[in-house]
Length: 456
Image 1 (cartoon, rainbow, N blue to C red):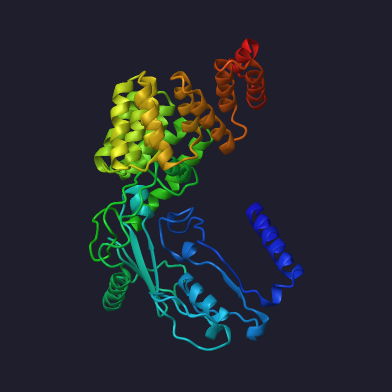
Image 2 (image 1 turned 90 degrees about the vertical axis):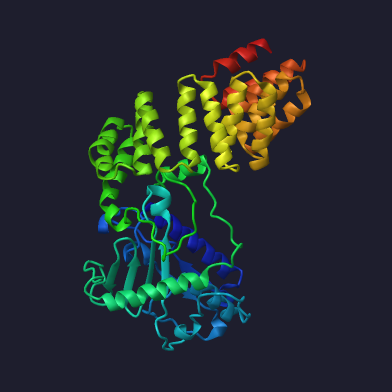
């Protein structure tokens, strides 16, 4: 409800601004959503893993310019997001770019009839998050076909809740839709050599998305998706029965109830799907937080054996080795993650930091510079590089990086603390005292900064 109220207020302010500036009558406004939400239907309590209409169906509201003469009406025919760009082009009177897959909705907005075009949908999250097969699907003529190791076919006119799977009862219709789906995917594929491989999420991005419930423990981009080449892994529409327990475990963990969360992984999830990388790393993360490093290490290794191309697993193994003060082993693991994903900021940063912890400042400085090549605004790297450069006597460059860190994060107590040390080293205790006072303003207690202030 809070999110709805917030969005309602934002949209209202936008409309008021358009009205105040005299732009409302001539403006085209399109309101839509990126996904629906599963509320327990088919075992999914969020979205992204399954492709039932509870998560695929979204509203689409179009306000046309007054000059178009289009009267308000409700169009019940299914349309798709790919229709938005052609619609906007026609409303603006411009020629749409070539290669679009959608078609303009202006004719239907004027009350014209149109045959329902086939709508395509897919999700790769089951593969990236859980090691399951991806899902493909097509909706055409009131029928919906889901292509997976376990195929599904629904008559949406008679069964809008997608309860009765007719894939075996209607083999001819299923095969026709399957062929239409495969042909559509092949016709839409980029020419050979174009498009490139899908990006691999870096470890920090994966951590943030996992906290929001978007990804699990897998993560290899891997081969191009092709419905004619089944993966042979678990069908997500079968694995969906695990999702409710998985989300409950994550919720318990986020509220600090680690042992209860671990019991769900141990007693329910892993017995049902023992090679699921998300379940393995999920339990490993809990074991690490519970202070059981050996169990965590074994689980991470099992996950790595299932998905050897996932750099985040090597990063987690490396962090575990840091916890156990095995820095040389950690460095090897971080280097392996770096080789798997050269643009993974977390792997590059941890590799650099380990060199500093091992007392190799030259290596650390070189590696920190590599991190900044990936992300010039990486705050921790800017601070740590400043520290290493100050130790090496390169005070001006050190100051530059610490000041950059404060531009990125103006309330960073650690950046102010290290800037204070630098000012002392440079013979300016007055500036040092000011920096230590700023550090104490943004973090309390901060005994190191208190000592620095006393020294200044």
